[in-house]
Length: 225
Ligand SMILES: [Zn+2]
Image (cartoon, rainbow, N blue to C red; front, side, top):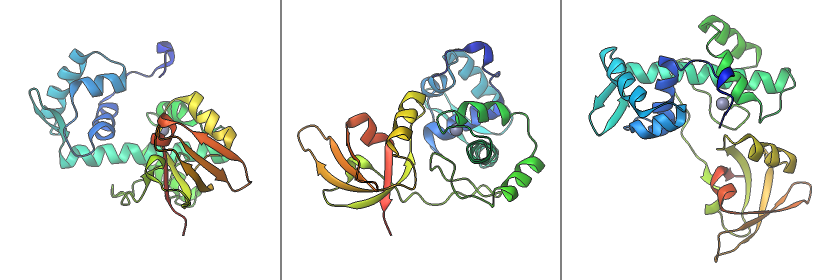
């Protein structure tokens, strides 16, 4: 969570659309969840939902929150694509660490055009995933199907690859980065402890990691094929 409100860019229509999508996908996002996500008041969210509805970007029902219309979803995907390409660029070419890229991309995504975004995609070789393993939507707004499962659902002896880390906390990202538990890393599941869900894994380099509940929910893996 960013506590430095002075450097926070003002919350735009696009930020709202992205948040609705992040909170609920194509389902209905509650006022409360979107308010939390954007660190704004519930009243601001309610007002904005009415405005977005007038703009044809969401369907808003009292007490049921808001869901994206087809147009709203296209707009959200456009911004998600932009955001994830910028994150990839910052990590691969400007020496940012993976816990720093999100905040910077949040700022930059408001400043660049679609032309810039598509040139950037070309420059990066049309990557399919951002540094956190999140899929980058195509220019048409399509997303690859999600074949990942959380680490807490693995079984002992499974050999998998870290595919995505669903975590915004920079301290947690920095920790996982230090441990080498980033997308692309192959791991073997040594133990899944039934009593508290703690999962022990071994990395490619033989390092052993014992991971508790918050981490096993944030780390996603897929079959290592
Ligand atoms: Zn991000």
